[in-house]
Image (cartoon, rainbow, N blue to C red; front, side, top):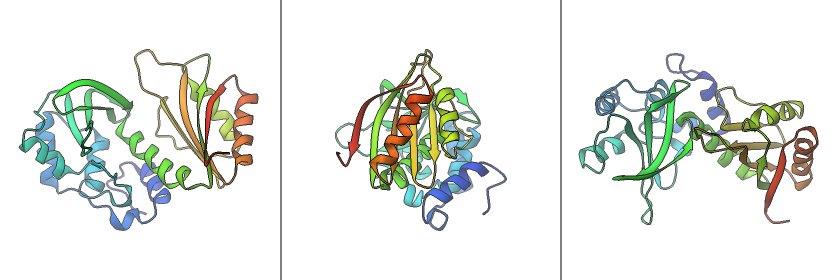
Length: 251
């Protein structure tokens, strides 16, 4: 299993294992397209974004989203057609084709994190911003595990983890480790990803200057008993509270 110039080996292994057929269908951008985007940014691209464009800048294969286009060509077209104007801080990375309320994805290049940068959504002309992920890396990994593991389990649920302190994962990680879940090391305090043979879980919260002591999660497994056991361990072995559980399919 090869990687590009040694970049992102753990994420590559993660995605290639989670997403069937990814290696056969992803396709990278041409070097001149990457150079064009860097000129628009007016500064060096985050190393992770350069890896993404090299690996998936032309096609994300089965990782592609229905109404979102992260391709280099779409980004360049949006700038060429002046849908968005070059900005010294914000760089368009994903075009939203939703007809009702398109919220495009941008980098906030002034908020770097772990060789990547903060991801935000807003209208093309500006306006209120929504910051769903601390990094583009986490957006991709979270979406892959949610779509290809959690969402394909016979039973799943969504809920909230509420704690006394903002660092929810410092309480959650030891419990998930003890239950035999593996977790990648490329995420930060706003994103948790957990896998085992019988279950998978994704957790996230909005990155803020003053972080909240709350985190949303989706958990999937072979049956409701498996999920109840996992949540029971979290509830009894930590001070975290689990609230607003919704089951799919409903119990």
